[in-house]
Image 1 (cartoon, rainbow, N blue to C red):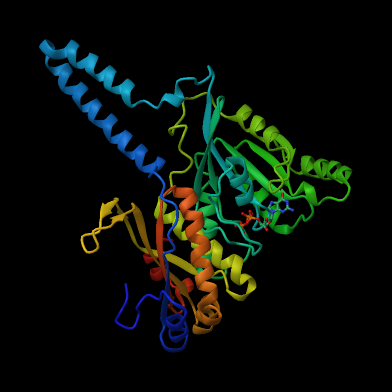
Image 2: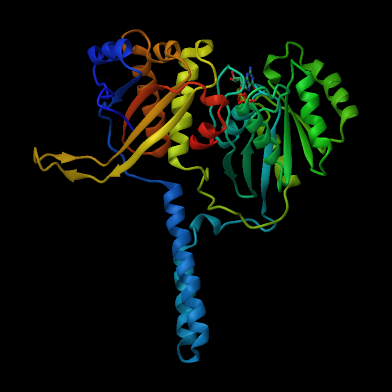
Length: 397
Ligand SMILES: Nc1nc2c(ncn2[C@@H]2O[C@H](COP(=O)(O)OP(=O)(O)OP(=O)(O)O)[C@@H](O)[C@H]2O)c(=O)[nH]1
């Protein structure tokens, strides 16, 4: 990841030197926190699937050999029952399951809506438009339904640069094979870009629910009624639900509406699972969010975070000191910016910003992943990456 000049920083003096001298800088956030039992739903689920795969293989062999057939099948059932998630046991008859795409122009509150529906922070949010670059599956399960959310980047007109084109493609491709679309608009600001999204939806046969978000910003609540009428005239929406994602207003109603439009089916994912994205991906999004929040308009959105290292270390006795060390995940990440001026902004005065970003990101990661994290951040200048198709591919776009 780095050359000799790119030593990670763990104190302010080093941070100062780094801003002055090199193209690469980093800071380590290694403040000890309370140890917690490692509990990773996603990894747990992968193991579960592997186990099920093995069970199925056993079944094939057993069927070929009649003499052990009954025993093997009995075993299969026992093993299957052992691994099947308990929390699915109370599933209601007529359980609904489906994919739900959340679409809308940038900044209308799509990520906030998904996060608040899930009650967990998965998708990054900031006041700066176009902070979402990837599709994120968030999974909402309750006794009646499992909705698998696809959070799309905002669709917008100016496909100026390669990255924008890709984001638009991702937004449209998110609509393939979904059962329901939540079309999110800002109750206060109706723009041409909203129409563009609506046009794209019009080309499909999808069931679309209009979500009028930021209802809390309306001074006169009654003003939402003419808005609903206008929307009703322009498109055949299956339902229209005004909400405030941020203030959790009317989200229960929205959940009911979502369930009413999903097909009857067993859950796709374990009902305890909240995302199918990897911890690596979530870690990079958390870091990016912290920078966007802290640096605001000072950094452009052509800033990306690459996870270079993600290593779990079990609790052990340190061979050097003989002292016990808690289980920990070591994460190395590089923040790519386009110009050295931007690098200085990300690092901040005396390394203060990057230090704070690292501390805030680590806190969020420890909460989301439920384990101790040691985070090392680097900042690198990579000129023209957001225009370069090859660089985009190498960074995972
Ligand atoms: N007042 C108010 N603000 C909201 C509400 N929902 C979202 N916001 C704010 O709107 C801004 C944009 O929210 P995001 O969730 O990032 O919007 P997005 O549509 O995902 O944006 P992109 O990632 O750019 O497509 C943030 O500052 C949110 O806090 C709401 O219900 N009320």
